[in-house]
Length: 114
Image: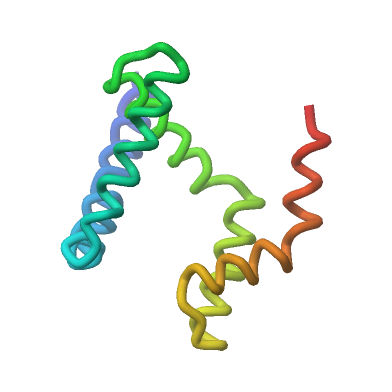
């Protein structure tokens, strides 16, 4: 029972963090509605490709995104992105290209894992 309550508290904390992230980024979404369409087009494509419902495809994408956020390699790349944006005044896509190039060996190592 204790483990259940700990998991419940952890989930509530993650929900609060997510709500904070959502409210922080709402202004970005208002400015660029094409991002919404892109996201949902990917989810629709996943639903079709895996012969699943839109709800299942959405759920799978949320789970994937959560796991990606906690992935060590992804975090290293994103730290490099943030540093490039802060220190070198790059926009996000430019910083992402830079970070992927800089971390390419770290990323490539993931292809040999089983």
